[in-house]
Length: 118
Image (cartoon, rainbow, N blue to C red; front, side, top):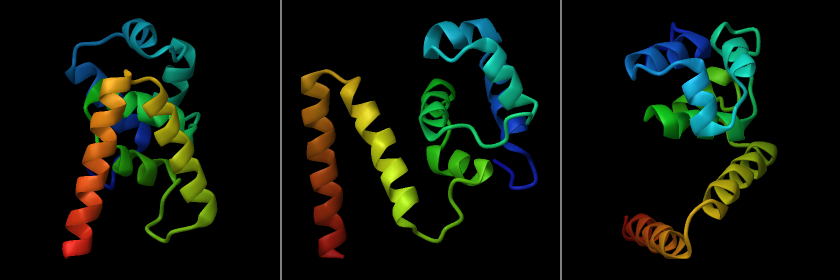
């Protein structure tokens, strides 16, 4: 993703590259097509993190980059940003099967161990 491009441009390009209509994305994500259109035209420049998560998954995009483009993340950590990210993560986890949740938790433990090993 290019920093010079807007969030809407990145999302519209990703959707069209996948050959998806706004209605198809609505069926897959539950996000109303009119709302998607407003995001793609930058009428809504800072959509909720949960919506960005859904679109990142649907389009195979980097969630962190979408957060930056939407102005949710600037690189400087904040407790409010941390809480919002945790809410998005918990929502995503709740949509997984118990087996997938276990796999995610194992992966998180692995990442934490790698970080500790340094």
